[in-house]
Amino acid sequence: TTNNFILTEQIEKVLLITLNKPKALNSLCSGLVSEVLCALKAADSNPAIGSIVLTGSQKAFAAGADIKEMETRDFSSVAKDNFLMNWEDVALIRKPIIAAVNGYALGGGCELAMMCDIIIAGDKAQFGQPEIKLGTIPGGGGTQRLIRAIGKSRAMELILTGDFITAQEAKERGLVSRIEPADKLVEEAVKMAKKIAGFSQPVVALAKECVNAAYENTLKSGLLYEKRVFHSTFALEDRKEGMNAFSQRRQAEFKDR
Ligand code: HXC
Image (cartoon, rainbow, N blue to C red):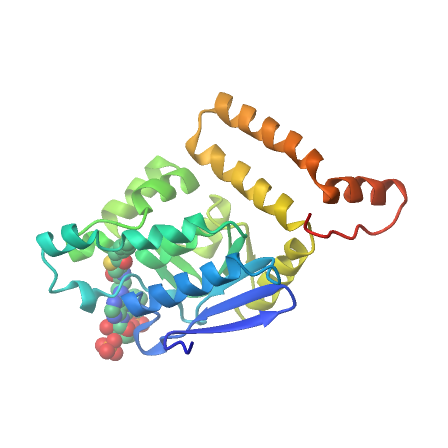
């Protein structure tokens, strides 16, 4: 299949997806989003891929949903289509996704980054939810995930004013895990992704699932869920191999079993 809006490249066990719609700052039209979802789902079921990096350009990760595509829609049509509900499929991918954000991550762009598991930012990155300026509100999880990432007060301020935050502030507040020089960002993201892809795939998937459960569960049910999943890793050959390798002072060789 040929893509019109994204580039994909496999680097060892890492799939690198680059949003590639430079004329409109990677605005997330339906064609682009379906190509991203298609690539993610294929990677999720491909045993040769262990982790995924999602990036844009140096100027923009993504400047939001495609405003020109939304401009003429009316309520009955968006309600009938459950407009943009399919974006949430990104959060259902079981393999880790690292968002490498350079430049603008605005509106749906910020929301797409937040659906990923780790965000790392270039030093010139900017994050914001400017939907209020368009007479609408965040629709891709911004009102839910941004609060969990940076706290209610600052998230409320960004969502109500449409102001942007810098990579530096995003890091201080925990929205992003680290900042890299813009021109080194993708390389660093791929390095991190390779490290993750070197571990046991079923164990990585279980770890991701448990961390995500903390988003949704109470502490009590989350702790029980984690314990049960932890116990279940003892059914894996990779768990035995990891601990044997430690005792024998050698590198573990995981077989994804
Ligand atoms: C469609 C967009 C776009 C967008 C930029 N472009 N953002 N097209 N949808 N979201 C287009 C511009 O129209 C322009 O095309 C080209 O990209 C370059 O943009 P400029 O504005 O000329 O660049 P610049 O002056 O550098 O400003 C950059 C910017 C600005 C600050 C990022 O483009 C901007 O404010 N964009 C909109 C950001 C936004 O409101 N995002 C939220 C969207 S709503 P032409 O053809 O004129 O050259 C949303 C809802 C999410 O995301 C729901 C999710 C489920």
